[in-house]
Image (cartoon, rainbow, N blue to C red; front, side, top):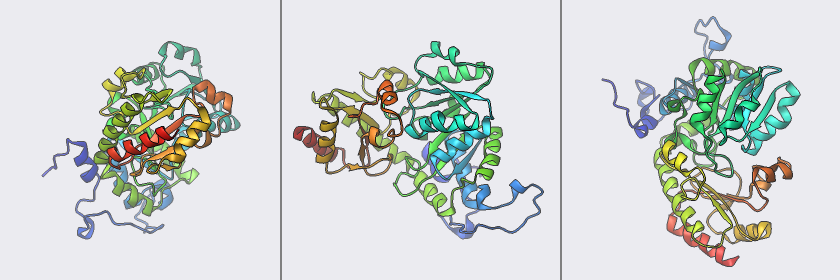
Length: 386
C-alpha cells in the first residue's frame, strides 16, 4: 500500500527510507565502507564508491531531499561551498558568464569575484529586486542566473518569480541558494527554479555538528553536477550523511519554532527604540514584506540589525548577551550572533561591503530553539547595558 505523504513533515521522516527496513533498523544505518563489491557496472560513475556519492547513506538522502523539495533529483556534497562550486563548474565553461545577485553570502561572493576569473568564468552582479536592470547584464555567453531566497546578511527578498521568468526567457539556468529559507518555508522547484542549493551545515542538519551541502532540482542537471563532483572529490562521508539524515527529520518542528521566535524578536527589537535598523522579512517595514508573504510559508529564523553607536556599540551588545553564542554559522538549535564584517563577509573589501549595505556594526542573529521569553529578556538586558 502506498504511504500518504502529502505533508512535508511526513516526507521528511519517511521519504527515501529503505523499503524494507535494513535488518529492521528504524534508523538508517551508517555504511562506513569506502568500497563496495563490483556488481557488473559498465560505467565508472555507476560503481558504488564513497567519492561517487552513491553509498546507501547517500542514496537515501538524495531520495529524501528530492521529495521534500518536490524536485526530480538531489545530490549531497561535503559543504555548502562544495555544492556551489561544483554546480557552477559543472554548468559553465571557460568564457561563460553568469548573472548573480549583488548581495550574497561572503564566501559565494569571493568565489565569483576572485576565483572564477582565474579559470575563465565571469560574473555580472545585479540588484535582484530590480528586474528592469537585468537585461543590461546579459551577454551571448551568459549561462546562469543565481540568487538567494533570503539574502545574507541583510534579509532582502529577491524578485524570485521574475528571476525564474527572466532566466527561462533567455535560456539561462535559474539557481537559488535556499539555505536561509529552508524547504519548510520555500520549495524552489514548485516555483520553477531549475536548482536549489543548501548549506546542509545550517538548517538541514540543524545541530551545529556537521559540514554538508546539497543541490536539488532537475534530474538532467543533477546528473551533470554529480559527474563533476566525482572528479572534484567533494563527497560527504557516511557518518556526516547519517547526521544530516537524522537532522532532516526534525527540520519542520525546528524551523517553525524559529520562524515564530524570530518574528517575535524582530518586533521586539524594532519596537525598542534603541536600534537604527532591523532587517527581517516578516516586519511590515521590510521593503519586500508583501513579496515574502506571498512566496514563503514562514519568514525564517535569521535577522540582522544595527545600533546607533556602530562597531563599539555592537561589540558591547554582543559581549552582554548570555544566551546567544558569539560565533559564525547559523541554523542550529542554539542562537548564534555575529558581526558579518568580521566573519561571513570578512573577505569582501570594506568599500564593497558598504556599497552592499553591510556596515561594520551590523549584527546578525540566528534564532535557535531556546524559550523566546528567555531570549527577549537577554536581548533586552543587553540593549539596556549599551
